[in-house]
Image 1 (cartoon, helix red, strand yellow):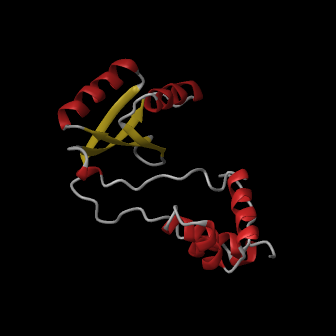
Image 2 (cartoon, helix red, strand yellow):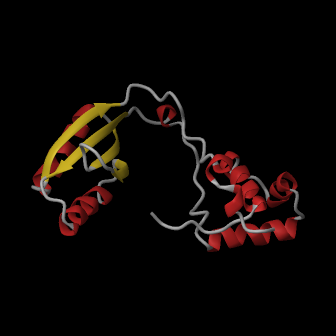
Length: 168
């Protein structure tokens, strides 16, 4: 696990506000976090420079623009060396329908989140992955029936130890 970078309470306020509304203007953001516009802008650019803020994205309601199915695949590999894991991860990174992948502990090695036009398209991708990587031992597939809690940002106030914050 990587060591976290030290930030202060104002940085936490900036990050929390941006998670809720990424298109907020600098003036609005400054008002929300209790800064004037110039220092707020400077802090924002510093958070981007440090790669704490990795980017900005739109939250798209996919059901309104495309029929689709979402699938979680639990993958187990035969061998677990760096080369075998790297080959699998490269294959997943080259698969556009794989929108997220996590290496995990426990009974499986990876969880892959797929978004496909149909179950049939997923089956084709599944078969192609197995053909391309003979190190895949098993894939357990689960269709997501509904989203019961949408990702709304990280709970920064609950995760960051107040004692670990740098002084303002």
